[in-house]
Every structure is written in C-alpha cells, then in structure tokens.
Amino acid sequence: METEPVATRPTPEEAAAALREAESAQESTRAVKVPAWYYPVLGLLFAPYGLLFVIPREGLWNLVLLASLAAFIGAFVLLARIGVNQMGVLRWLTLRELRPVAIWSLVPILGGIGLYLAYDTPWAWVAMTAGLGVAIALFGPYHRRTSPYHRRNGDR
Image 1 (cartoon, one colour):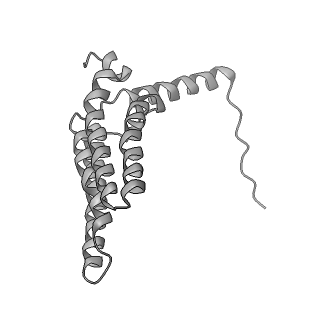
Image 2 (image 1 turned 180 degrees about the horizontal axis):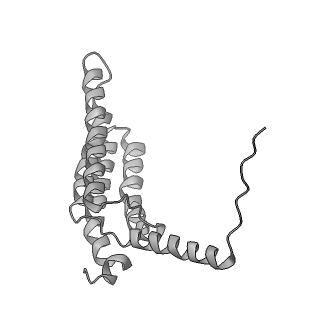
Image 3 (image 1 turned 90 degrees about the vertical axis):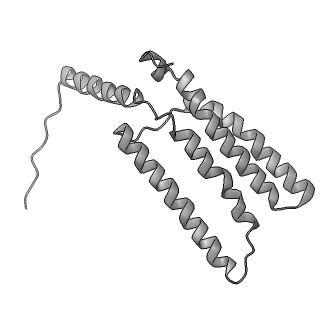
C-alpha cells in the first residue's frame, strides 16, 4: 500500500506571506475597471426580455419563444465573454458596489408586481424588465463615478 508524503506545515511567516499575496491578488482584481459600455449594453439586452411573457404559447409561437430565449442567452454569454476579454479577468462586484442597483431595482420589480395584481396583464412584466434594463444601464456610469476602486486610480 502506497502512502502519500505528508506535507510539512508552513511556518507562520510563510503562511502570512501567502495570505498577503492572496489579498494582494484579490485587491488587484477588484481594481480592474468594468468597461464603460458594459452596463448600458447589459441593460439594453435585459430591457426587452419581458416581451417573452406576451408571446402566445401555441403553435409556431413556441418556436419563436425558444428562438428568443436562445438569442437572449447567447447575447448575454457573448457580452460576458467580450467584457472578460477586455478586462482580462472575470470581476464580480462586491455587495457594497451592488447595493445601489439592488435598491433601484425594487422600483420596477414592485411596480411590475403591482401592475400585474391590479390589471392581471402580462404586459406588467414587459414594463418591469424595461425598468430593470434602465436601472442596469444607469448603474454603469454611476458605478464608474462612485466605486472606490475606480476613484483610487484617478478615474472619475
């Protein structure tokens, strides 16, 4: 029976150095700027998504629905790929950075729910996703202006 060699534990100095290196790498990833065009394009892609709720669910319309879903998914994947290629890294926003768009998004979400409950119409979801698209699109310029990671590098 073979046994694997036991790894020696790092010294406290080695562990501290490794931790500093990991924190430095994480901080340099946070400092990567999201391209200025990214969130406006993301908002434009998301805004018409609610139209899928008003497509009839019968006959050839089912193919239109599936093709539309495939187009949306493909567009989002392509946008993410282009953004990652430009940034050189997949950068996730922190909860602190996402807080404004999360709060802004409550307005169209609650408005869409209210419209649906009041009028029982699928067009409420069209209005909701259009409002969310606007919130996402406006978040990009706001984020570039207010993010501590962007300001630190002199980009206002």
